[in-house]
Image (cartoon, rainbow, N blue to C red; front, side):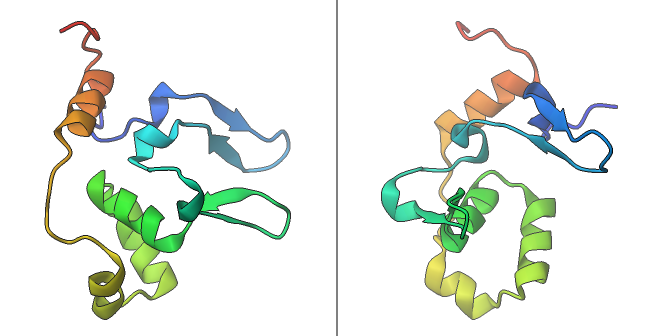
Length: 111
């Protein structure tokens, strides 16, 4: 079965031996993330990750509705929080959508 909006199968998947845990390494572009210093926080161990508003906006822009729903429920984000921190104007990044479509449907880069 094909899931047209799921692009994670195009990137390496790593599984821990003996644990029910895996992770996928993907480029920031695949999540529609603009990685610049102001958009990054660091964990207590120094692991970089996007700030909550940046990550939430990337899920919204990439139309990753399942992960977006999980994030909203898990963080208990409110409509007011979204209106304050997110760009809800509904603009579309055509270059990103074309890149993702070519990846999902295996279109050559030169078309």
